[in-house]
Length: 158
Image (cartoon, rainbow, N blue to C red; front, side):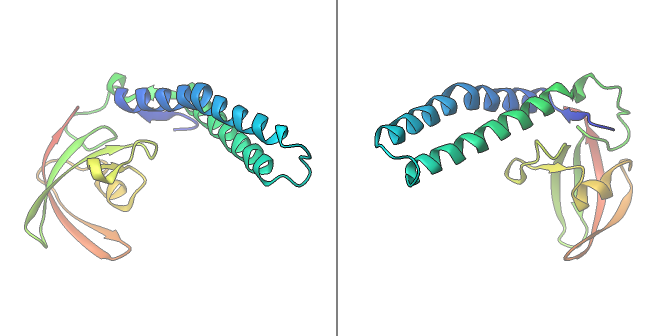
């Protein structure tokens, strides 16, 4: 896998939007805050100036991080991924055998993981446990709270 970052098209767009916001909107806000702090006079003991410079460093670090990720993106919709097994990008519907409830998750890269949207990272315990399995299989996945038992019902591609 190397330095490659696997994203859906939506995830790629989200990171690009974040990057553009950091470069245009946030940089402008921070530059204005630095200018206002400098106008107050002595910057050697100016908390506002220090805070603005710290925000600038954080913003630039986040810009560099996003640029690095975007430079190594592979859109998973373009990848030749088997449809019968669970891999990144799969939408998995499964039955929780302990609670008799149906769950649906999309397996994504850590950059796109969002539990509220039912997008789980392939690096999470459940994500790791699901990778490579097929519909109809019953699995036990070890998580920090114990062992979860699932039966995989369907696997779809976005």
